[in-house]
Amino acid sequence: MPSQNVSLTSDLMGYVSSLVSEEQYASVSEVHREAIRDLKEKKEKERLYRERVNQLLEEGERDLAEGRVIRFSNEKEYDQFFDQLDEEATKELAAENV
Image (cartoon, rainbow, N blue to C red; front, side, top):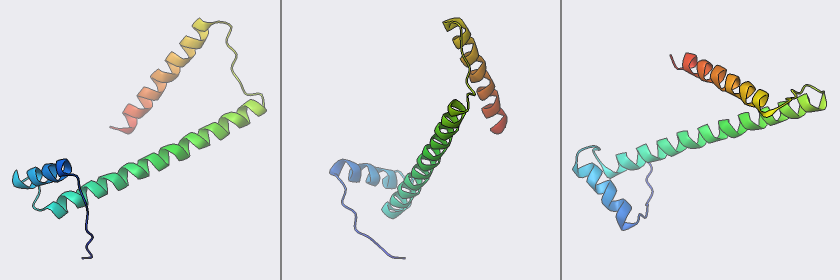
């Protein structure tokens, strides 16, 4: 397996060493590999999130341009609409995570 040298602050090196000495990991390299895998996963989630936000912004711009908008008479209507939207989204997310 190819190798790389990594420079860490003394605090980080102490933390990594404690993980190994407490037998949570078999080696320093194992700690580094897991950290990099986690970072890779985090970056991919961020990329997908940004991609989805951009899609939704484009969809909103198209809706606005085509006159598909919701007008509210007052703040109560606005609050009710978004409370209902939040409730529906929460239910959808819960169903996806079952």
